[in-house]
View 1 (spheres, helix red, strand yellow):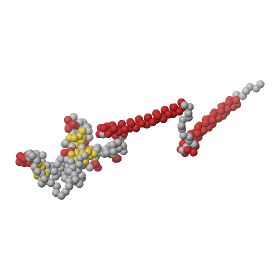
View 2 (cartoon, helix red, strand yellow):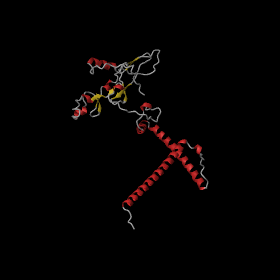
View 3 (cartoon, helix red, strand yellow):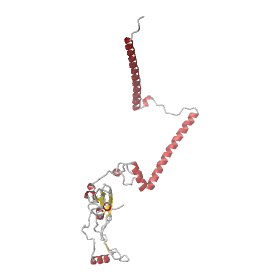
View 4 (cartoon, helix red, strand yellow):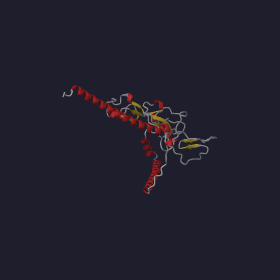
Length: 285
């Protein structure tokens, strides 16, 4: 587990450091990092390959120095960036070499440095005019989550089946399929044991159901009534009674509606017959 840098103990090296060394500086650095051979007695401190070791005085060292810091990608994904410390172990670069990387919104390519995307320049992209549109180039990593330009919902409420996995609570998965894919990749042996235990429990349930079915068939073959519990009307839940009453009322209403429709049809036929008789009276004898 990496030791993550806290916000309060950041001590970043100045960004304006020179990238090239003079002859004197190169000679000094080569002498400084020359091998010391066999390690000397470090009870009272000393130098080992250019690194000065100091003993702890009346103080217990609870934890070592941080070796990573939190950062967020352009889409809101949380990440850990490694820190580079100097030889004395006093200052670090704050993962500056990662914050200098850029991301291109045009070709969806990242991890390059500079103001232009090399892929768009090489292919003479017509959408960003060969990466001359500055709005298409954004930083790849951000120091705070609030400064992320395009945050996306990447976590859900479905937790990982393994309790010690950090993908719990608010950092769960959006779908059950995502959780299963994560489990197959990150917790292969644990997930296999979990699936086997679920399969064993289902097998026990099937065995119990088959046993009950065999007992029922045997009792029916012997001419005995199945051993069912006798349920009185008082034991029937109120919801079941209400549902049965509702269905009976719907059936009665359907019958009444059909009867009224038949009566209306008979009345219509009688009126038609009366109208025809009035228009064409029978001949006189």
